[in-house]
Length: 320
Length: 304
Ligand SMILES: Nc1ncnc2c1ncn2[C@@H]1O[C@H](COP(=O)(O)OP(=O)(O)O)[C@@H](O)[C@H]1O
Ligand SMILES: [Mg+2]
Image (tube, rainbow over all chains, first blue to last red; front, side, top):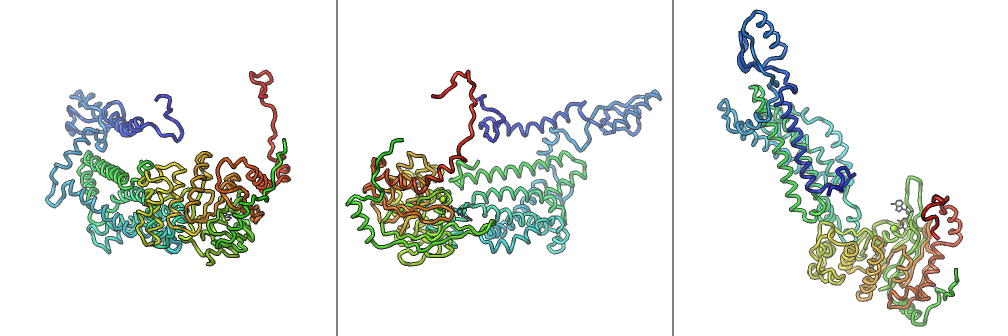
């Protein structure tokens, strides 16, 4: 057991070690965050006032720069008045882990401040809807087009130069246009996700299709397969596993466009929630919302990976 | 080296001669006429094959042998229709071949099984795409049984050993009932023991079903053991050197590997494929420039 090195080049570690390292990858950043938050002499650039003393504008709980606090304390000392007291604190934009953890729960239970505002779960639902629609519409066109371009040179030559050009145009740049054409509600946001995903999708899937072992096509032809049967019985099943993997990666990219998309027109979804909470300086809620996106993305991906292992049984030994 | 007196590889026993006479009266399945192939590469035009002529009779077993890069694969790919010839033509049952088709089955060195299909589905593939009459499934199972893999009909290719994979590939090609079975170094990737077993299997299959086989190999023993006739190619450009009628009687068995006819044929093949003058010329280049790198007082100073 211990004979196996932790640093063997391109050797797989034992499942136990993999699991351990997987957990560690989350524990390390969390530990750093805890250190910064809970150990007073690490960072803590601010002072939180516990007793204002004689300083008139100090209130308990107030956050101040070190310098300001020292100056006022010095002044009070010289005048012989009651000195203020305080303890080191972090800026408001870095809440401690326990505050964020609490916010993860309270963010869902807090009633919106105004009647027309949404609960967090509604905002999240809205975001998921935008992502799902954008990705679905993109896939509806992108997947077949990618497969065709990867299979037939005609489609490849006809599509790819333009697609290659278009994918360099930043999707958010189309925001204003999308709003002008599609209004201010969900439609322009879905359009941005579409633009951000579609062009990459065509190229990635065309490439995956081209990577299919050509000898499989040759074998199929010597067995009597012709055009359509080659496409539907060899090309598509031959790439389906890699295509599925591509789709998982592309879905991850679609998430990165979400925030931009939601800022277009009437701000909505999780982005609206984040900006709103930032405005109220509820930074623990902001972090909670950001983590929720992460958790949502990771669980979706793990779920899709799990489903992939079920529906492609011939891959069970190869794919992890 | 002691010189063993071998008969000429041209000497045939009366039975063998009679068999070849009968063989030549069988209908012609495949005819290759003045087949040439040039490749246009960045370095210019390369002639891979020049003026290949060959006639294969029904249920004959022909091996093609030659040094690496002499165009064996190119030849068989043209017969399969996977590569177009530069000139000349290939006739199957008198009809010119254009493009691949199920009448010529092919078995590749790299197995090329469809990884997403089970053994049974792989064998059914040809039956389904060519829309043949009859039920694909029982037919497929029958072929799987023939290659002795009934127990594995629902396994996926990645669960099989190399020899088993190649048996599936053979069953898959045969299920289409091709006029000719083309095999490009099918056992080249297998270990010696498995290869021996596969050769025996193949002879068994060939004996029992109506199939003509064209088999590429670079293994001299394999060629002699399997073939009725051996087409010997030479490289640069690929041309026919000789078409040898193998004088080893049928049915074949591994004991014949040491028979005089077998050894005579092998000696001739050696001569054709590794010509003696090239050997001495090559020796000076191939010979390593060695110096003694063992200490004189080493525990094992000398291997003799
Ligand atoms: N697609 C190709 N393009 C250019 N040259 C090729 C191509 N295929 C084969 N050749 C050349 O043709 C010759 C014969 O190759 P091949 O038929 O694979 O030989 P073998 O199977 O006898 O080892 C080689 O010199 C090879 O470099
Ligand atoms: Mg070859």
